[in-house]
Image (cartoon, rainbow, N blue to C red; front, top):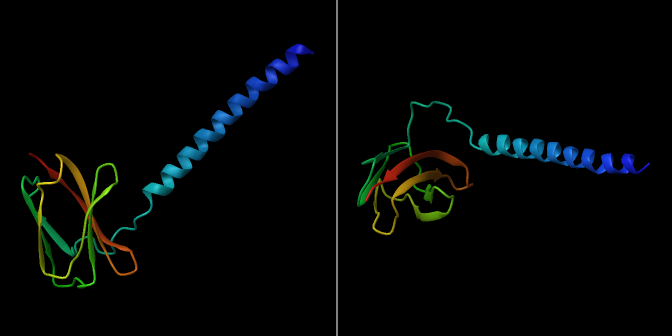
Length: 124
């Protein structure tokens, strides 16, 4: 009788490990599918240069952009490091407070929907 109770906790441990792996994989798949692709990938709302950037990066908003858009920049860990309205046709961002690394930018509309996103590198 002692052996039956000894096997049961081992089976439960394996069951919990398998369930944990399935849950983690499910969460990962959902997080990768958060952003829907642009209907026409050839139409770009934003042009950014230089990439890689050293001291400044320029964002040029194309003709079809809305002045209510919001430009946000996140570091590679997902922390928001910059946010400003895209009210002008061009934005020049000083990178003196940015560390070396990869950054992700998002152009969002008033409802918070991502209109366009991309990444750039800061090298110092």
